[in-house]
Amino acid sequence: MTIAALHQKFIECTGISIDSRSISQGQMFFALKGPNFDGHKYINKAMASGAKYAIIDDEKYKKTPNTILVSDSEKALQDLARYHRSTLTIPIIGLTGSNGKTTTKELIASVLNKKYSVFATKGNLNNHLGVPLSILSIKKSHEIAIIEMGANHIGEIRFLSEISMPDYGLITNIGKAHLEGFGSIEGVQKGKTELYNYIRLVEGLIFYNCSDPKLKDSIIESDKTISYDSSKIEIIDAFPYLTILYDKHEYKVKLSGAYNATNMIAAITIGNYFNVSRNEIKKGLSIYTPSNNRSEIKKTISNLLILDAYNANPSSMKVSIENLHNAKSTDKALIIGHMLELGKESKFEHQKLINYIEKLQFESVFLIGHEFYNLNIPKQYQYFEKTENLITYLSRNPLNNKTILLKGSRGIALEKLITSL
Image (cartoon, rainbow, N blue to C red):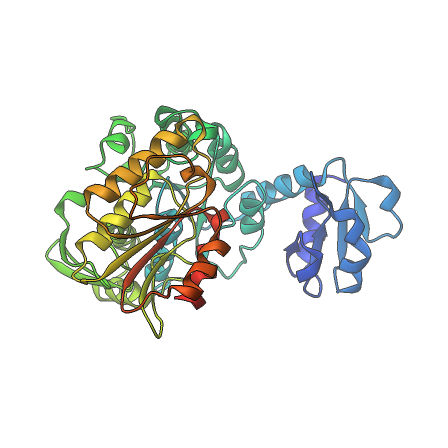
């Protein structure tokens, strides 16, 4: 079956799913394979739950007219998304970066939603499967879309750009993330700026922070650009919530930390470009409520938590710890999970992080994860191999009346600690 013919089948459906557990009536189910799963085993379940068609690449499962055989289910999903994108006429903003891309995407969406019907990547669906699913979720009613793209190796952003075909591009920053796949900070820069390369190819527009040297160095004279300048931000308050002065106007957001100010002005800049009024931009920023363990402020019976536990790398870790250090709260604690995907730089970066914490004179510090093992850890700091070990410790040694930062990579799942704090 051609992709054009498959797209006709897709138009008959209510949406796309790759998970038989969450099928909605009338969806198209793609049976994908991975190292530890085979979606073909769940075709009957998907169809019983309401799937209209099942896309398969294993001929032995071709048992009904509603099972459509293709050579490669994953490639068919990506090709279908690429074809669907070619039928869309709305502006699409492609967004990537080492830190803050999901928060920036949400802020942009909240601002643009004040004037337009906006589609934005749901949650963290930003990889080789998530981006196609996002593109295929864009409806005729949408007037603008924001597609988040993540990467852990060179070539990935180029591939995702060729599927999503953005007209506009934004890189939040370039930092020490996914070094294991990119190899070096230079590799990160090369990988992330593949978005710029695509935007140049289609003669689109780049939004960029002109006070960020790595981003500025990646811009060439012929680029069509709109710049914003993070050096011109005045921080009025950063904790518990952020208030800034930018371009003579005050903006507020329910996010903690001065490091989120650059994310805010990216949203302000894009709102201005798409003719959202100043007052509506302010409203869009102020009504955004963070979720998914990103810069969330949570008040428990015993403590005030800064829950920033979705992910971590050396760049984001440093600014989050600095934010707590600068907070006016007097009794502070750090619960720090290890950082993954740092490759050969891992030991160096984790020791550097410990030294930074010690320099800032934090006394109540809890380190979790095997990447901290066998490093030079000050005696007053507590080390635990797993989050569950700290939960057990806290049941006997509770923390009270503290302001606590929880920050670590996704794999360490620090949100499990909330009920213990």
